[in-house]
Length: 313
Image 1 (tube, rainbow, N blue to C red):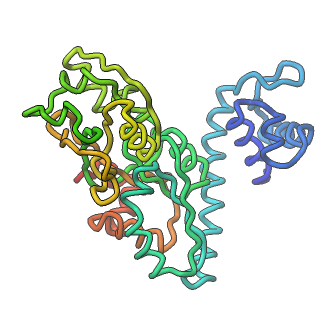
Image 2 (image 1 turned 135 degrees about the horizontal axis):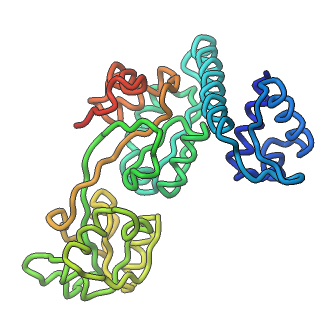
Image 3 (image 1 turned 120 degrees about the horizontal axis):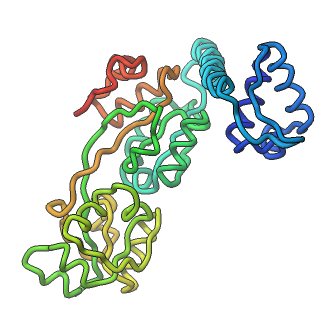
């Protein structure tokens, strides 16, 4: 049994059983992948993939078990490399964080500045996208950690550590009629087109729950994953915006006005997301503590080992 065979098998599963796509991703040939997986099946004495001619159409029941074990073996192999790098480099290496635009733009800059001062030899990379996208980056090992705020259903099988709670605001152009309301209500918001996040009215988001509980269907004019895009279209007069309060900067957003909406929506939790049993380099622990001071190394380690999975603020 070779690690390469396990990598091929994992990539076939990740590619939706598309051998051509898996071969392209691994920079190898489709026949080479097929040969290696058949050799693995012969060695184990069990069929892993269900084939119809040259096409793979399903994974057998023992194959699904083998895939889970293969994933753990490959992660442990990566952990071995991380340990080696930890002891052969002094504060040098790479660190990839997957996160949403709002966190990258408004929550992380001061943390990253402090981290970079402390670890100038670490190459830091930010990958931004939707909650589903950043979950997959962590799950695949392309990101060391994610900083996630919504859609916890995307993070099944991953470890989540709570960092801080936050809530939302409504933004309007200058002199908008909504600014004259004595107290902001969902009914008042619904009188105007709404500009907000892509995920605000999908799944079980606090924004969707709030409107659903009042049986109100707002007129959603535009959605985006980028808070700055939302603000730009609100300033143009497309509608009123619902976004994270941290994303409003009074010094920069001079063409907008903020109305606090924390009384209308349940608060959300920003969490750090990791693979279970991942090996983290020392500077990753330091970054986590810079971002959330209550997440000491002992807390992170206990949670990664499954000893603190119920940890909450």
